[in-house]
Length: 165
Image (cartoon, rainbow, N blue to C red):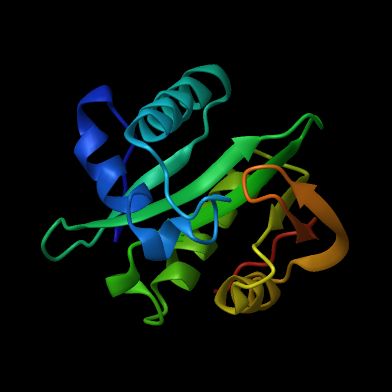
C-alpha cells in the first residue's frame, strides 16, 4: 500500500468512502454523511495538511492503485499531540491492512514529526477498532463524548513508539 495526499479533484474518492453506510455508521450519528458534509470534510483534510502537515491521508493498494480508505491524523488542542484515525472501505476489512497502515503512519508521526503522543478513540460498538488500538499499544484513558456520533467513545493514548523491526 501507499499513502497520498488529498486534492480538491478527489471528491469522488471521498464520497466512495464516507457515503458507504458500513463506514459511516461508526463515525456519524445519522449513519450517513451528506454530500455537503463530505465536501467539507475533504476541504478540512486539505486545510489540515496546509496548516499543520497532517491529514487523514488517502491510501491505495499498491498492485492496482485501488483506493482503500484513509489513515492519518488530525491536530488536537495540545501541543505535540495528534489524533489518529483510520477508515477503510469494507472490502479491505479483516485483512491486516489497517494494522499495516497504522504502523506506518504512527512510525512517521513519532520519527519524522517528532510527536510526543497520539490519542485515538472509537465508536463503542466497533470492536475491530478497539482490537486494533490495543494491538498498536494504545492505552485506555477515559470515555469521552464525541459530538459526530453523539456517543461516549473510549479514548486511548500512545506516548512512546517501538519499532516493529
